[in-house]
Image (cartoon, rainbow, N blue to C red; front, side, top):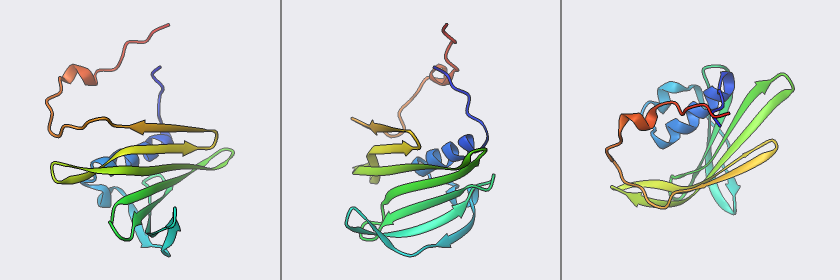
Length: 138
């Protein structure tokens, strides 16, 4: 189904999309700060935080050895308190000289989704109609 995305959900999704196409990520967020290094799955990560345009917080965890993004955590306010969404990136492969995650796991308050890419073709030609809003089904 087509679900409307608004407010801080839209803000958070925009950040997740920018991670895959990072041009402009630095300008999209403010108040950048470096956190204390920590470990994820027994690997040291460097932590960087920033603030979204609507006041949410995004935490990026980069593998200290490879420099690749391991985890993104975004926090947003809601009427019932702070909501946390976590994205774990894995299975990096080189595509046109760029390391890309072929698997990412999205976790939130009461759910989890795993996304896996089988193949990736850079600069592929895509018909504009593929970006049209789907018809509403009842």
